[in-house]
Length: 62
Image: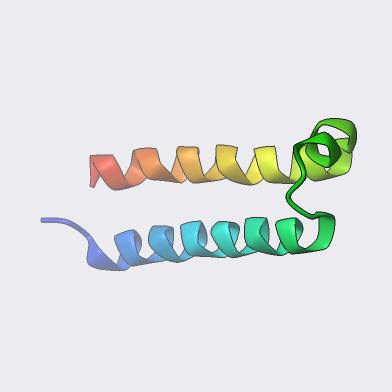
C-alpha cells in the first residue's frame, strides 16, 4: 500500500521548489539572455529542477 503521508510530503516539497522557481523568474525576469549570462539565476533554477527530478523518482517507487 502506498504511504500517503510520504507521498504528500514529497509533493509538498515539489510544490515548494516550483514556487521558488516562479519567485526567481519574477526577480530575474524571463529573458533567455539573462538566464544564460547570470550564473546565480541559472544555478538556482537548475538546482531546483534537479531536486524535483530526484523527488519524482520517489513518487514513482511508492
